[in-house]
Length: 453
Image 1 (tube, rainbow, N blue to C red):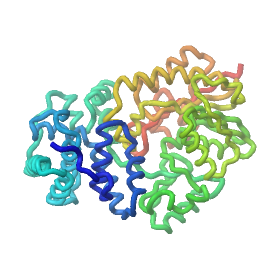
Image 2: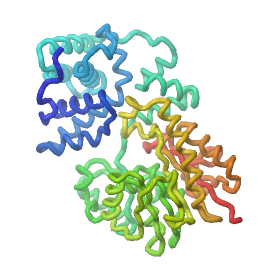
Image 3: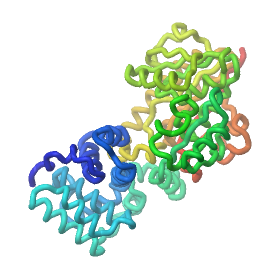
């Protein structure tokens, strides 16, 4: 079969945009939303077309591991034996046939085949999709793990891991979270406006707005167009931040006048949240290693009009604390992690993450935690957080740390966040929103206090 049809990426239609981005994802790790945003900047896009391109791209990314077994069955071939364009088209077409009831089958077939280019590929794709539309199904799974992986659209290694660590019920809850919609949640900037006032403005602009269930300053928003066009964005009235992420910021327990280190600060959600909490008399040092992410951090802080944040560049695992002004009253370490708690926002992670990557993250997290702990003053506190629920990156990292640092102790999350956070607080006192039914992302966080002497 011939290569990808020429000009496909430049043709600004929803299915072509999805086709182009999904081919990139099949080739290399790619941030789906960033890739779509780049496509949307090329030409004028109707909001409905943007929504369709987004649904197709994210839908295929989420459901690939449920769709691929059917492709193997229908074609009689291994996926790697099909060229990239063909397998991407089949995924795109099958997603529409299997998961988009409002799209007529004839439209899904015709529009997918139209993308195929040469006659040979068109005929092949058309034949496979028509067989699927006729009700063809993949053969039964070989075992329980394979069945679970198919039913929940997970790569086999992750299905096996979750079943072993959390059991069928816990694994299913995590899978449901991973495959669910990612809500648009805002954290209101209390230095600029009140939550009720911003909610009124958003409602007047045609948005559906509800307050977050646990976080004190959050709003979940539906409709209203792109975020930069929402009321209040330009004047820094809010920051886009998931409710679970907001809870991590609240768990720090920042107070007016304190000095706080955010050890891995970009893109700035928690750093700005802490800056609001400490007020003009306090200070936040926002540390970031990557130069491009640091520029994004600065831009976000500028929009929020926060002058009490010092941005510093450096590696949290090795930087000299004295150079940052240590010791600090509080340190937040939102550590680099596998990101398996935010697969709802980044389903591309299912394609490229691995058990080996999880192990590598766990090894580095312990080293960073040990290093930044030295920057906490006696009587101060340290919050360790990751957007994953993997035990090797969460409870084991904390347990290993506490085994070597008996001068730190766990404070229960619900004691700091209030009774409403009890369903998200583990028996050991950790905040854990992985597998929650409230629609928020999957975060883990531990609040550790340091003895005064």
